[in-house]
Every structure is written in structure tokens, then in C-alpha cells.
Image (cartoon, rainbow, N blue to C red; front, side, top):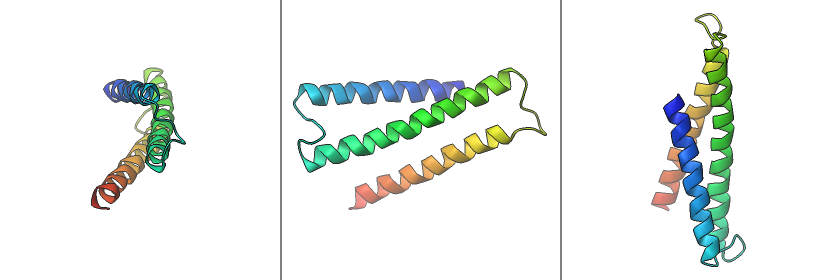
Length: 100
């Protein structure tokens, strides 16, 4: 889980760097419909990822404090459900954008 968190943080850092490059090139949210779509799509993705990273942190803290067990693992189940729902959504969106 820690590796997933590190990769998520690295992705967010890369996304911020890409946005910075776009701004330096003069491409802003209201510049064109395409740039607006890109900023909104990647911004929503970043917000969902940030929410997942917060949930990951809470689950990791609970695990390190031995608050998760075979009988009490609801936070881990909810965390996994969130990530799997996001995985499914992004696979769907990827295919939709690829095939359209």
C-alpha cells in the first residue's frame, strides 16, 4: 500500500509539472475547449487520487496502530472498493476517449 501511495504522489507531482509547462506555453483553462477539457478531466482525476491518498493514509495509520484485524477490517474494504470503482471508471473513460 505504501508503494501505491508513493506512486500516487509521484503521479500528482507529474501532473502539476505538466500543468506548469502548459501555463508556461500559454495554454490556460479557458484558452480552448480542448485545453478546458484537459484541465477539468485531469483536475478531477487528481482530486479523486488525492481523496484516495487520504483514505490510504488513514488505513495505513490504522494498520500500524493494529486497529485492523480479521474481524475489524471495514476501513480496508471501503478503501479497496473506492480504488476498484475508480479503476473501473478510468478504464471506461480511457476506452470512451480512445474509441470516440
